[in-house]
Image (cartoon, rainbow, N blue to C red; front, side, top):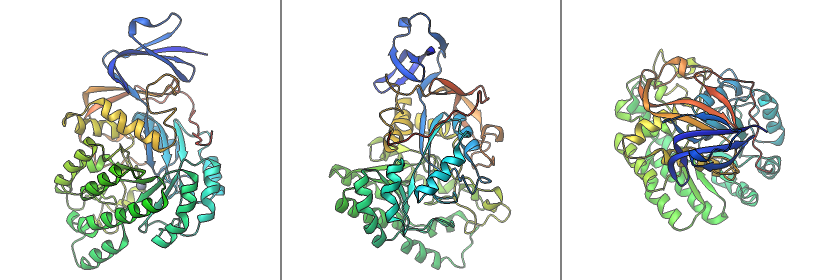
Length: 451
Ligand SMILES: [Zn+2]
């Protein structure tokens, strides 16, 4: 087995940031020692002042493969992720065809991913209106958890669930012990708001924002907290956008409910005040809200009500963004950001006094725990996979198309100057991104929760 030592003055371990050497034997971390304790015969990689963080884990990505690989796909998504410092992605069960709502569909996904992934991956199973009988078989087949929508996801092949259908599904979910990830918006408040905006100007961002009010998120979260209480399953709220829900989420955690919460870089970086008319590249659901709301989400991260930050990388064909007419009603909602999420987060976090330790918690350890791989990935600790990102936190760069690496290089962040540069990414001891290149053959594997 190959013996390697990864050295830096800023190694981000769970105990703190310190000068250290990470000793790697084959694919695993053997020990984390002081830089003067490197044994002989170890191949040395000295990164100097650049920080070494645990490889990032993104538990919320839409890879769209099989079926809509012209939107994204395993090759391009995992390549963009490697360039962004990620070493594992967990794919959402919709947007692909078939949607991952049966074991047969999971097998189709495994076939689509075979030989194409530059980093490790896993797939969430879907909970839809009529697949209650597939939930436990999907768990047995190795999914790390489930995802459902409380509002129409706006894509063929994946249905929303209402309370009645949730009540049929939740006993099965609870028996698996796996988390249920919930897109928490209810259709009622959205439908009422949208009806009132029938004649509004849909090229204005404010129209779209009004059509997806805070109440839609709040009502959905209240419904789910009640069901969590009743059925005792692990509830995970995906892409929290409204800060108005934070007090209730905080109280539910204090009460001991098995609850976790994520938000996304776009909610922490963009704000409604800065999204111009027709700027549909910034459309997502739930929507980016006010600057004041954004600051409250940062407060939620600070006080621990929000556990993690994941991308919700959700690309589409560029034409679906309707850039020519800039119509927020008809444009596809979704923002692709795998390759720039770490610098986006560092740009915002560093100016608020957070450290790389916070980023490692939000973008590696937190999502790893959710995805069931927290005992093997997401931290720089002996026995863990040798997954690292080498990150220069002091350099700046300008976001350009050639830095994006996913299938269609469109982004609301093009032209922005961000802080922090991903220099290299290592998957189980091997470089998967270095100096702008992707060395070696795709060697990513499915991470199976059942192993
Ligand atoms: Zn999503």
